[in-house]
Image (cartoon, rainbow, N blue to C red; front, side):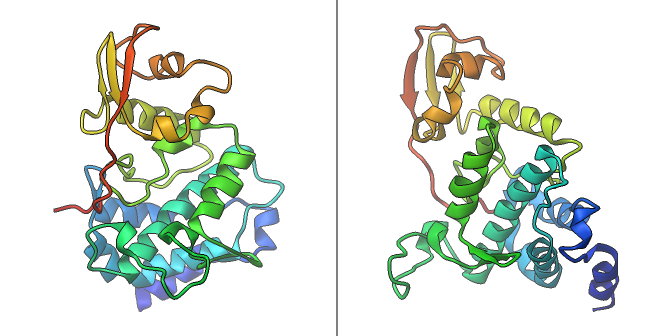
Length: 244
């Protein structure tokens, strides 16, 4: 409890303060470093650290992005919020084989875990879909977010073992894109044939706004793909991305 109190003093701010300063994600960074190994998540570890995670979520809730923040600072905030609240949702319902096992039968018009309204930020209540589709994809022209947002499943990108920050965001997103495309569990890329994640099928428009899909992939792939390469999409593994 002393540690929690100390961290509260170090990290906690008010919405008014964020007009002058940006969000400090150091607490989430420390939690990720302690509970993520090789991109997989020790949810039991996060459950043991639930007070610190709750503190970070409280900090997020009290400090929504301010107009004075840069776009990178705002985007880093929302990526971290999505990932942190996803972890919180999972540990609340452990044990689980899949995040999709979180049932919503008692909530009218809610059919998936991503539609549960449980996220309080500022004076607004969100669900995970609101953050991904209503904020991040709507307000930021950045397809690489699909390599940073982690929906707690095996076929998702590996969870980065550090928090995203505005200062490092460009480097972090580029590294995530290269890591995702070089990961043979999620994408198998050859010169004339590619078997890629369904993320590229579901969000194809995000990747092809100003280019073709293969041209986008070639920016980050170790193997240069022919423009007429055959494209297949891999089945998505919804099992929990837990460290075993």
